[in-house]
Image (cartoon, rainbow, N blue to C red; front, side, top):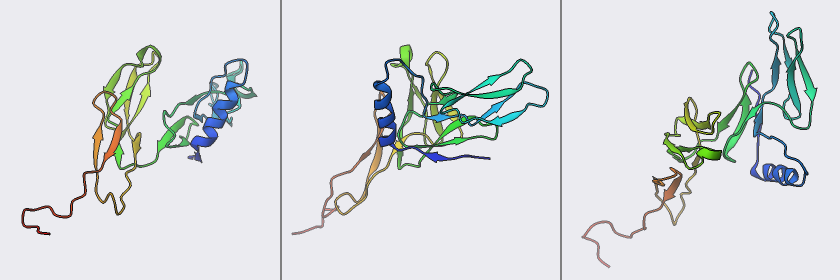
Length: 184
């Protein structure tokens, strides 16, 4: 069972603005886990929308979903170009929309924010480990940009920043003639 929702940059920015007005810090994610799985013999599973709930395990190993303003477990998508989804066990993950050109590096966070590793995001996504070091995960498309083709820009090629790996669309100059036999 896969649950999908779409996030928009505007609503996300509004949420971040709202959080900036709160006098204490809340841990937030882009996408949240949807189920709570117990540690009991039956591995009891209950719905638990962790955007505003937290999954706790009771003494007998059964799961309990508790309302909390801090929310629960989830993932950060590192882009506005995503949909949230969850696997059969309720673990959240980011699905990125397809792009014309893809980033080719992943960046760390925190103390590792100046660390970049190679990662072809046309078929991989970026993440970070517990220390903030970047990791490249196979399986789905990552972050990229879409290139506009119109009367002015009828062709493009992809180029990536050598340090950050951020993709961009390069539009070559448009010419009326492409060989030496043109006149006029």
